Length: 297
Image 1 (cartoon, rainbow, N blue to C red):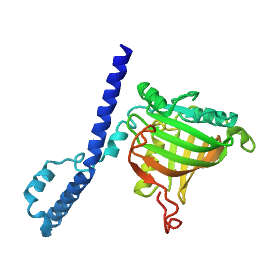
Image 2: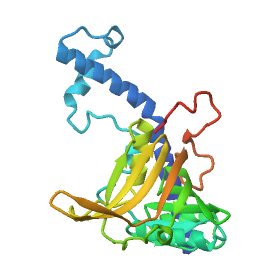
Image 3: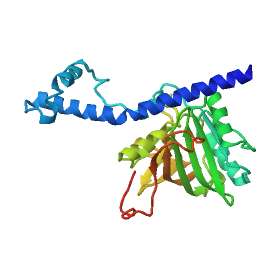
Image 4: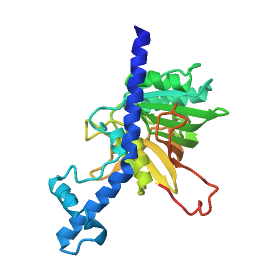
């Protein structure tokens, strides 16, 4: 019985992945159709002549435009399906480490577990990546977060959205744990935090901001005093975690809770962590000309 159940689950995941790739393959054609309908709407609204290349398909496009409402008029892509339930259901996060973690990386993973609401930390042990993804998917986790290290210093963060992806890879630097903060850390609240996304202006930046904010549930209390900040400056994302208290009618005081670290995106994969052959949506290529001048987020 367990063998047949595992086979059925594998077939289901294969089918879902095939449907996802099919929707992804339709993106280019749907984007072209959306652009054509946009030109038809503008021509009808302004009374200007229709572009020559659209005259042959005008009747079909006009009929589709007349049937659209506020929801169907917007362009949708496969990215909309990945986080379709964001805000409706609270995320469930599974946090683990690389193999044979140091005591500092274990402590960092524990702090990430407290930082992310509804998160569960598991020991990595000798589990392979595909076993981790399969277990997290069967347990209905929405995201798998893996923290990595070099010589005892946290230097990597992987966020894998389940069940189909995407997977974002970040390098970490200047990690400061709670007990390392000068003056001591403020008490950690378990309230759902407010999220501040600063400096994510490009399409890729909005994509990264969406990946990060969907790790946190929507606050149930609008007056919560817990704040999580992701601030982008020159493609380096500064993470800060604060509590605030009112010191006057219009004055507030910030108290750092920690941890704090800097992040830099170097890859987004259109698939889960175990799918090595999945397409890459973005890869950092610092050796290209003008890479110093180009800001992607």
